Length: 246
Image (tube, rainbow, N blue to C red; front, side, top):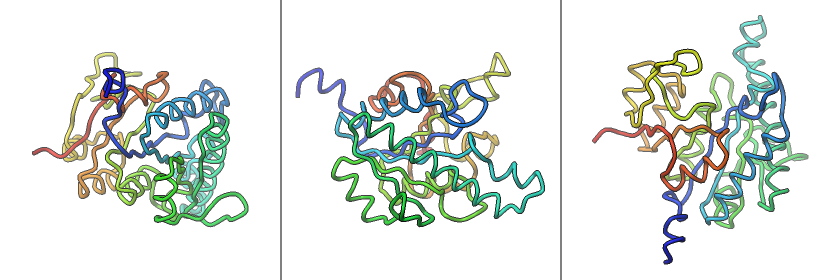
């Protein structure tokens, strides 16, 4: 192995990248920013080029948030189903952007919709990844009252991923929102229990519990920083690791 190959070799063989729907908005107030989607797709393509196996879960908050719909008087289950459909829209947009980068991509939905994507089948998804394809898991878990964070932890566990990488709009987990609190502390590493006990809102409790039960490391980083995904895969850049304390 050359020095260059050693430097670029990813730390993880297979990962799930969780992206919030809001991360796809760019500077817009709503919907998709095609330049932002293209930039994230290129970052994913760069990681796939290192022969790492990658799958994705994308939120739908840039289009519709079930909990907000419920707060507005809509039935919560119905609002969550609308949110799941929003994640399918984002998944199809990301698939298009990845394929423009030359990355073969499959979308699998927890809610079957055969005209636009595959149904979620675990073994088929694993086979796609073994063949170097990116798999985007859409429609959350297919059940209301569960977030896409929970879906990400569940799918990462099912796919036997080495880590769950959560791409956010800040470079890690902070004691408070760094965009509002100037002296907020950024954590280098946290345990699952610390995240729960300190009520850090990086992921919901169900997602943290699934990760903890399956010893799945969670890595939080800024998806908007160019090349950040590849850097984190090499163990570089700014990020927060959430792991079990030993």
